[in-house]
Length: 385
Image 1 (cartoon, rainbow, N blue to C red):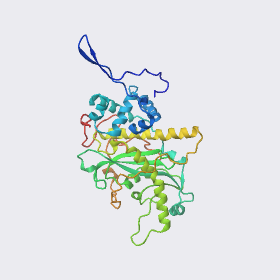
Image 2 (image 1 turned 90 degrees about the vertical axis):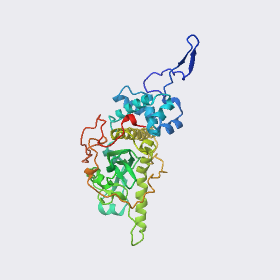
Image 3 (image 1 turned 135 degrees about the vertical axis):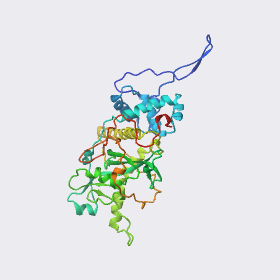
Image 4 (image 1 turned 180 degrees about the horizontal axis):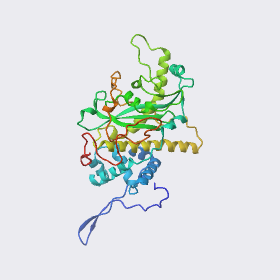
């Protein structure tokens, strides 16, 4: 598939070895550039994580900030993040050097930091969901839910023990996400924080400060207990009695509405770079996450436009509902203790989506535009595999 408004380019010949009989030398033709149309739609999405139309639009968005980025650069980057088996392994698939692949991948990831957010937190008001809980009716005249909120853990390679979270038995970064209850569009990303930061601590010092409408609440898991006025959470199993039928129904309601953000995480974690230990800088981790979040929101927006164009209803999410939390084995009673948020802030680093919107503070403590410097023990890009 060629880029819109550009003339089709003639396809280059596949790589072959030829012998020059006169000079007795072996010559190699240039390897064919990989292109979006090289494989069918189904295999393409499986390999790169998103559909062809999404990747085409992603390429266009990136090229706006760096016109040297090619179709091939974007595909190499998505392939690298998707499989994350090392530059040497991925480079061998394309018959190029690991240094060449590294250069092109980092070019795309560094440019991703400049991508403008497609979605805004204020968009949560477009498709509210009626709050059917007893507490909602008691607290508000018009109770409604607008956002599913949760954090996600991303393992990293570091010697700094301040990143260790016993809940996940490892060191990592934590990001706070908020997504639409309508179709899963990601409307809020805050982070990274050091992994020990409690969900409720991050919420209270950022998204919890948002200017909410009368009757509005978010929805979250039990890690957000303590903010009943702002966020609906499931009931905890009582120790001295059985859970009432109403409590069971409300828990089922919360679970049904929360599944959408768990499905969002499942899409992000399809990329092995976010499931396995990240080897490069924290800044590039944030940039890589920005790239995937941008692509995911593109897929939601483009699908919404497609449905609108064919005049179909869009009442159900297109995200699969078979997600299982990769940390389901964890004892859910192992709650994270609330601590001072300043202990978990990483100076000079904050993902740039929806910052300082509606009263929420995202802790920008410095300029993170183009710097590739961390304040912890990170691997250099030369050793990234």
